[in-house]
Length: 101
Length: 262
Image: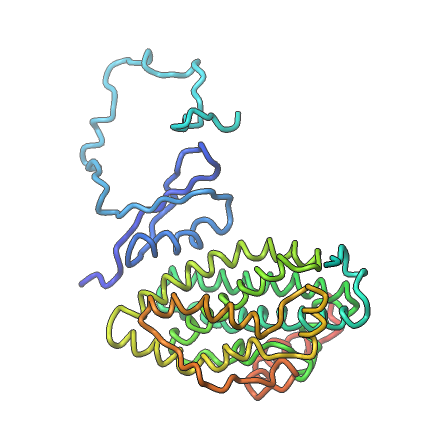
């Protein structure tokens, strides 16, 4: 059956400046501007939001689940794990300002 | 010009004019919110259904703020104002209660014309002398900004998509435009509001509104006929059957048991 729906856009939501954009779902829309406008009501009407991204789903290149074994580690590489280190949750902004603690 | 820091600072004449203004604004917002909410589950696509319903809730929220101010002005509590008033006591423009029909284009065009008018009025109130109303207008205008972005996006797309969509949009504009002009029906409150610097005259607001809608209509390939007769009377409480039927629906549950505690 032909898909009569509009294009799918993936929606990314940012809760505060400096926080990462988090994937929250997808949306059908005719074009990117419409996708942003509709995403605002679908995904940002309950929780705090300062910024939204929409990305055409077809722009995303993904691995195949059949290949998910490539992520498995077969030997002990615990030395790679970063527990014990402090990792910043926020992202450094281009202007050098680091928002919030 | 002297400003009014609180609602209590108003003299009797100005106070009566503010009550009239707030009733018009509150009733417009509630009734268009009610009409738009009737698209819930029926709007053209799921995403728009949710967006349209959410904006209908925005309108009800705005109405609630104005009804609370009316309560402070001694007009009764919001529930009484909404559930007990008879048809003649309502001050919403006829634009807001024209039935939806079966073409969403009508509701979209109505919403665009109303939202633009509302934004123009809120902008004027922000600059006005009644401080409690200015600060409310600052808050509510931010929600209106999204409504305007949303409305414009759809107007432009549907106005230009296909011959059928363009024809349906133009038909909606032709039908609803005289009602939209009725948003600016002059009332006896005009002079007092203008004199006190609270709100410019309806004539002045209508001119600003006309310049605000023109670029969007033109971008959408749509046009209005300037020499129509505006639909007046509703601001004075002269309403037809459409509002009566809407209120029968809206007030039905309350009438079953007016003393019930919720």
